[in-house]
Amino acid sequence: MYLGVLGFITMAIIIVLLLKSKTVPSIAFIAVPVVMALIGGCKIADIGTYVKAGVLDTASTATLFIFSILFFGIMSDAGMFDKIIDALVKRAGNSVMAITMLTALVAMIGHLDGGGASTFLITIPAMLPIYKKMNMRKTTLMTICTASMGVMNLLPWGGPTMRAASVLEMDVTALWMQLIPMQFVGIFCAFGLAFILGRVEKKRGAGYQGDAVAEVALTTQVKENELAKPKLFWFNIALTITVIIALVFLTEVPSYLIFMLGVVIALMINYPGKEMQDKIIKSHSGPAIMMATTLLTAGVLLGVLENSGMMDQMANLLVAVIPEALGPHLAIVIGVLSAPLALVFCTDSYFYGVLPIMISVGAKFGVNPSEIAITMVVCRNCASFISPVVPATFLGCGLAEVEINDHIKSSFVPVFAISIICLILGIVLGVIKF
Image (cartoon, rainbow, N blue to C red; front, side, top):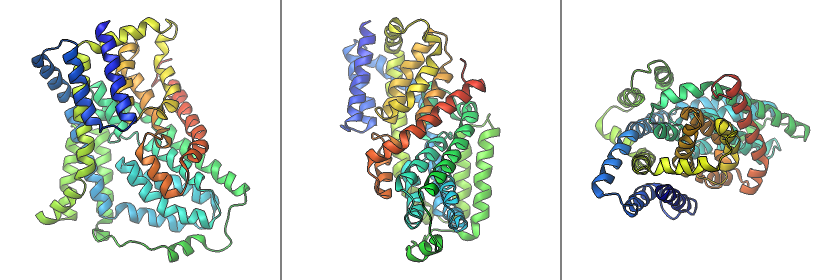
């Protein structure tokens, strides 16, 4: 019992530090568990063994994130996303319905790199002038972006999916393959939401008599992308599709190796020469290193909690208070609660704090760990970008000129509904056992 209490204290301290932004996750993940393990009587040599085991479990996921960020960063630099989005915007015309549906599509394309901030930077500046000209509400723009990004964030190089895979100690592509049906349902729901909100805006009287898209194109300054490679557009499209297909079908090959090869080919073809390649890699090293450090240091936290016995004792304490009838349905319960919990827990505290404990509790009731992880990833992701503890949310609100409280009011019910629909379809399709 002592170790269990110590484990809960460890997680409480980490969650408070993260929620109050007192430190970056990597410092909290190293310092707190090591200090608490020492307090619990663990020897330095034992802690070293725990940490080594934990870091080894998360190393492949950290490697995947580094090279996926590099790959999609290169594609963005080369102008692949810009060209696709420009072509789509020109086709939107003056139809309110087409603009809301287009918003969802642009957000999904923009979120292929898995970055919330970059997606908002791609989508909102492109669409906001059109929304203003068409007299459409800016909260509608944010709601559609949020829903679309939430379901796209389930890709194997998305942060939450990788975090869950590292906790499960399994290949992230293998986890993604299990949740693909729920992701497809989520994508369908995001487009459905865009359609419904388009109808709502039209009934409110949104619309523009002139050529809104053309006028926006004339009045908006477009920044020239010096790194763009328009002549290589179709090559980059083919390379991106090949990488994604390889991730799906070459399951025996490590996911990070596929992205490594993709980066090599993309750099050699788009930016030949050492000097330019150095420049490109350095320009994307910040986000890649930040997340890789978080993933590797999460291995420290998980290694100490699991190997010291804290996790097992924490699970035993929770099992004692959970009703017997509720235990076998833990995955469904946590799935229903995931969207509301997203407003309270940041991504790291949720997946590295709550998920391991829920997996341990579920094991006592015979619940498959991957089912708990899948419900937490899918249902929580739907609400990721309305959460006030996710920094990208504030960036999106700032770009869209929307107050965060208005964003939460307009977006929470739709994204919560999408999370429940995904959960129900997951049960119907057998991804989640009832």
